[in-house]
Image (cartoon, rainbow, N blue to C red; front, top):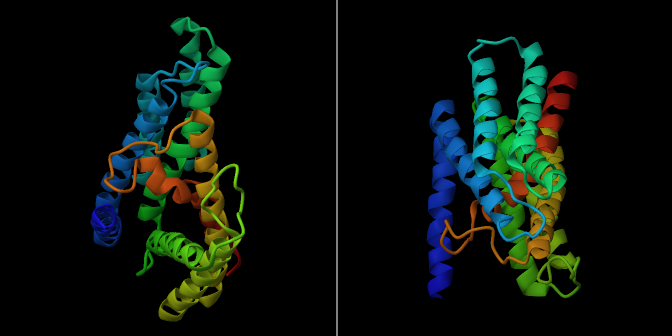
Length: 271
């Protein structure tokens, strides 16, 4: 009961900080997401501290993340042309890879591969959230809806799994996840999407979004479980009492963001 209470209190504070910053102002949301991003990058690098074939440079990872964030911030304030973003991003990433030429480590290929994975898996989703928080002018921010649906999927998958879960989903990766829990999460997430669509008068967008989010959030959870299992760790960190680390809390979001934002782009293009 004590652990459950700690988990609940942490969850309430976490949800309040996320949604509060999103509804308050894009700058507030950017600061919150930026803090979580740098903590997540640090956590990602520390996960590989004991890995026998990797010696990552946390400083290089933080500098590269800072560079990528700077490019998007400059674009938000129209200080650089949008057409240049792709080229500058590639330049920053290639420069980060070049650091392996001087580090003289035993496994440079592994170091480069894992570092690039960190940029794709952790840095880019958070940067896209920051960019979207400024681009989105709707009265109900779409990233707020995205988080609500992710949390709905997580909560109802857990509750359904505890109540009626029997059939293991992928036991070798996540022994506690079941098909019943996964299906329960998907059904209730779609129901939540319909509800958001009712209040925002955008049924199509939020119903389809709910389906995409339910699927990708579940996959994101499994991917992080696979990564932790392969590294022999239980949690990615311990910064959030009762929840583990930043990557544990944002695992579903990290995988969901590109798919959700792509659907948002298609929807705006067609409708």
